[in-house]
Image (cartoon, rainbow, N blue to C red; front, side, top):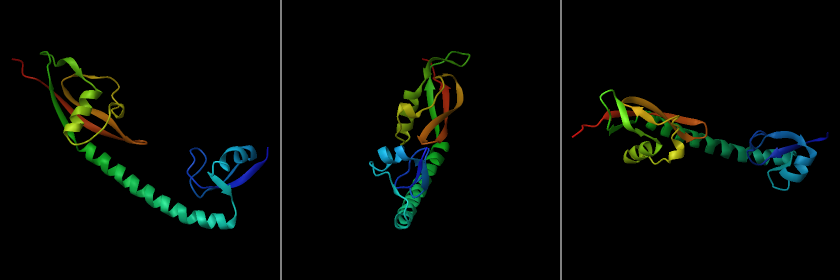
Length: 153
């Protein structure tokens, strides 16, 4: 099988980052990477041009990673409280699910969707629970949710 050396113009999952010189199958290069303008022939001029572009992309990625880290840190420091009806043993009559946590996050000034809440199963007991929230990519934050028994009238 014949391989070709190409210079990536974009980040390609499982292949490389922008500016990397990669060896790929000739057919993959000819039929997909080059026509889609994802890669170009790895010449000296192209490598010099991509080096500048890669510096810009690395700076943008670093800024984005710092923003994600800040969001994770803010969520980790957050403690959400809710009062639900429960029996004398601390078991909730209902449950605290992803929708409830999204509502609590919204009230605290953080906008997330239900799909971002990574609850294995709804919370059904009174107490303090750590709930993972998907922030971005592989970054997750554990938010503390304190479930209290509501006063029954």
